[in-house]
Image (cartoon, rainbow, N blue to C red; front, side):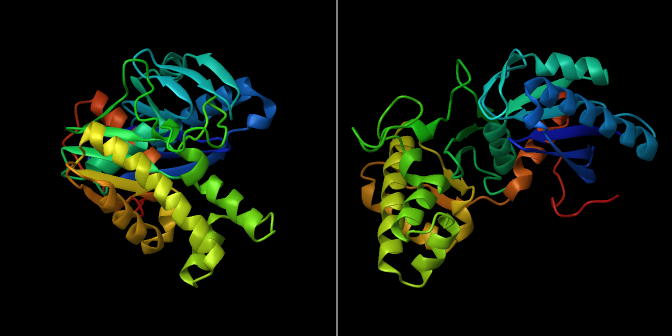
Length: 318
């Protein structure tokens, strides 16, 4: 049975799958990155994990994987197959595509984690059928994936979609990127967690707790939440003005609040648009499987199988 390896690398953990030609998830597995042992150990763990997946495919499906897709965080040069920089993993200029291709002996595609997740959401998730979409996950930071006719735009230097560093509050909170007032300093899950923890004097309180307090009508929570929504709407309207997407897909931790986020966000965006066409604003559909599914799509693209659709990501055959 022809299949590919899909591997999604995060800061602390890796998610992987073997994906069949019909899109079925044949096997899934997880491993720690081992980042506490340094960047070289992380790279070796990726290569070893991929080799284990190859061996599993050979044992269970009669042949090794025909290709592999790998999604990683940080700055990624997808054209050259190089993981340029990742603060959480400590690596710089790692030729991951070449290293993995050498280990596996098959073609390998390397992608940025958010853009790869956006590829999956656009093709088989919440943006399916949309010719233009913008995927914005609200997590520790905020990034974006610009979808155009079934592909995701990486930009001339690999920085396309960095909406989290659009300045929405000039002269505001300092950002590690060197600017002040960046969107992610106000509307990311970590920013909301920080603000709510300070407001309720509980260092363990987080954005999910804030969302629950909003739902119960807590005025402090409502104030903090609305500030985040307003900042997010300002950043999104800038993106809408530049990109004119048909669908705007919101994912990440904050999106798990459901209508507590989406109802005020839709209202705030609607109030801000003038001549712009208002896109459909929808929650992401694939959750934390998006990166892995996207890596599988990258691998299958190498084999010319872009017309195939994966099954439900929750359905896995051993």
